[in-house]
View 1: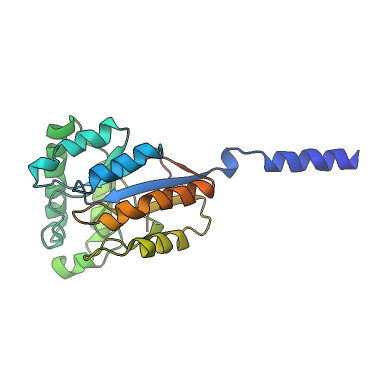
View 2: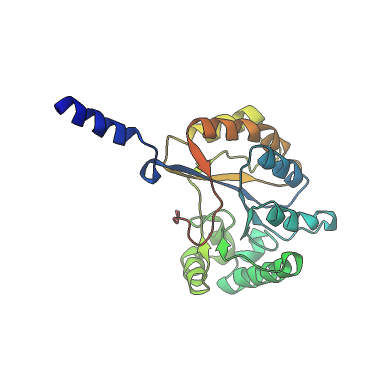
Length: 228
């Protein structure tokens, strides 16, 4: 009798379920770019959905990519219109004037604007002090919540937002070292012109995370919040 009870308990513990689910929220900042379509193609191959925190590209040849992201089942998030730290981090008004421009731009491109946001540099960045003369972030975060935005930071980083691009093997190594079997991964990668080592490393990253048991989901207003 004792053995059968113990066996049943062990079987229950080994059953897959929500309590043991591991989720990877794969996100790309700064796009669209000449890397976007290759990224989308790889995501299609591996049946993975991601979140793209976008800017307003000046390259008209890339404008179709906003709809392409949406049509392929991915989520859009607000990043900034200009991505110019010297402009957006001068004041709360300057930052949200830039975001307002991005929202209008996205309405024209895809017909709607998302309610999720990622601050350039993250919600605890110190870059803003250089331009505002004080720590502007608390005010920006408070205003984000007043406006109904949900903002997301990250807990898994490949440090790939560099120019020249970080080598493929280093991107994979840095990202996988930061996984550490977290239950929810909020992965930061970058989508900017010429960042092809991310494209090259993406299939291996996806394969390794799937092997570790992660399911990929997009971020939205219902996603558990991760803030620095």
